[in-house]
Length: 225
Image (tube, rainbow, N blue to C red; front, side):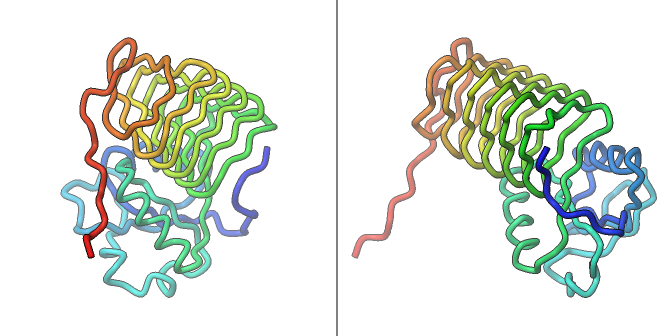
């Protein structure tokens, strides 16, 4: 298995975000023997179940001096926010890791990018390619030779059959099934429980069995000169 990043001596992590998805990430990290130094977020969390130190909003601190050589991880379920965090991590040249929960199965032939989370009881089979900042949530299955691009979120219990391709920052809802050989373009939302049987080439939100375009995303137009 090819996995980002190179091993560091540190097993200390700063997380970004501290709510529902972060709790799942935190428990995986703790079970893997990592220490969580604290969290960054826009404001201090209303509850603190893991007794973590609040370190401020990442845009308001000298991030590189604070983090130093420790790891960082974007513990945020929202694709748009996670995309901004990945850009910030790259800009500041911070040390990123990917997290594979101890209960997950990942084939040795899989390639896995940075800042990606592989959750509890996830299965990733032969020759799959997973990009940066991906969330593979509880119990989802990624079959052989799937290609998942950067920032994708695969929700709990979803199944991607063999040779499925999912474009950047798309979302596949809980308990959805994507048929073998299907391509889903970037920035698509697939509703929970959907069955995708055809390539998705038009932006919007799809749901149903078979999944159909239900909400179209307006195309951005350039300014007229």
